[in-house]
Amino acid sequence: MRLIIAQIYSQYGGDDNNEFFVSLSHQMMGWDNVSFAMTYTDFLKRCSDNVINEGMLVLEGIARTENNKWVRYFGQKGIKDLAQMYAEREQTMQDQITQFKEKQNLSTEIQHLKQQLATIQAQKQKLTTLYNSVMTPN
Image (cartoon, rainbow, N blue to C red; front, side):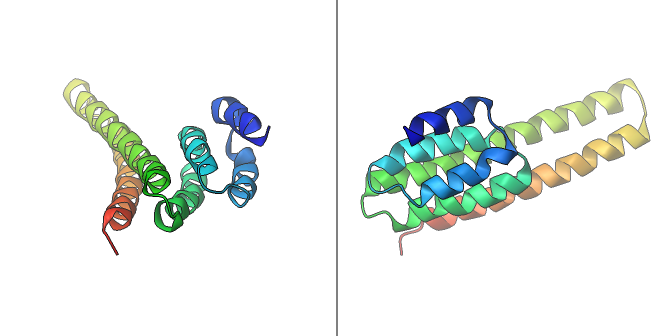
């Protein structure tokens, strides 16, 4: 029942629903973490950077501590999917900056986009570093 609620939140929820997922993560064990990690990753894709930063820790816990390598894989995959989402955002932002430079010289708009790009790049780097660390054998 709780995973069904999680699936609804993953499609329609927002930052305010993150506490539900964090609480649910403490109740998940073994193979339940596969569905949980997939659903939580979908949810995090809809959330702010701050909530994603909290969620990274939950996915990292699955990726590092689960006994079954297949369950760990879904924690790792969630982190990788979030990093990929930021890579796509980065590309979109770079394209927008290029378009602004070509069409018009609106330095304040370009500066604002560059600030957003820096934030996106920092998030992507944080996720990529975490992904690489959970993929490295202990």
